[in-house]
Length: 531
Image (cartoon, rainbow, N blue to C red):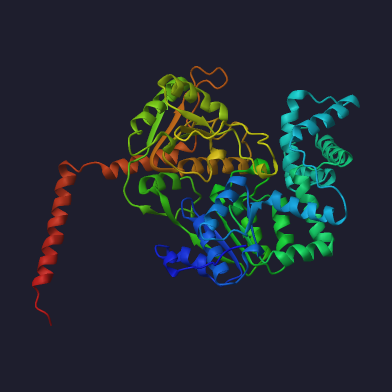
């Protein structure tokens, strides 16, 4: 049980008016649209603490939904420092597993078996279809796995998938009818083996809440307040679970940033933030636009990647080093210069762990890793992707990075770096085919690539390097062109450099003359007698 929970108004000191409103608002349904570095998790934590202290709801009645085990652990740590230990914080999948297993226990059935390796099941289905005369090659399986995950995250069956492809002209990895068949076979195979993958787990929990009144009543009775962190990462299946958990009039507090929606491969869609408001029309929207993380020049450069009308971000840190953009002929040359930049920014005030190299894909980090090894600089590979359901995997299954090195440069994909911050960031590989990725061809895919670019730049606090290579030694992508995302970035950098340049010549004379005129006018005004 939690101890005595208190909340002093001193905890509100230093909050912006918008942050304070998010923490103290009496509204039951709130969506906080929070820009990068705006303190959204701090706001969410303070709101829980304040409401528990005021006995607006018990800590045990709070369900906080996140997208990674790490995020849930961090939220619990913050609440524990305020003596709040009973809040249920975990991923959507963890919440779904609790619902499913409690129902199975009530029926005397064994708990759900979660199949973490979707590829193994997809391969089995592909083999059975090949045996029946439709040949599917091994190299096609990874793409089939990705498409199957996307389809399930949208709540599609074979029939509805086929209709979706025809209506939206989606590019299917097989003939649409054949993939629809594979989708239905996959679900059937899971059922025959008595296993659930992560998406089917969500589907079962949604069905229980929707169709079994006793389950719905029990879950809603003990869940009096819902909190959603990183709400822009929801896919339709997760949103459907939230809708069933909340009902018609939930106590629901969500925080998210559409500009950081980068998990389209997992079915995430930033438009679901609008769907949230449409589902619960009384939702009050609060915008947090003050960036407390990055210096003004970094905010200025990163914000050029946002859509028009979304650039009202103000930096809390007014001064700072102007970001640097560099082009190189070859990947190895790019890597060695990135290492040189990291070394220059490593000093007693900046440890190696405060520096990071971010790339669109894990393979792009290989030359940097080799260059760091040659220079004797410690580094840590953070793994290729985001793992939204990792809190259901025991014994570290699927772990792709070594144990955390307490003082090493982070080499990470952009996906893995979201939510993190570093004193200095080198964002590499800003070339067409790399960022945006060559596989991103549709308009919505290119928009997500642009958001990825924004996420990369907005991880930096004080120092930012952006590089690209012409790839002269890469037979796959020779003579690369600079990324289309570089144009606004370079324009912003040049403008910052122009503003910072010393004034000389005729421009200096004009500025001095203007200062003299202003001074004379102020002296004249001060000498006029009062009426």
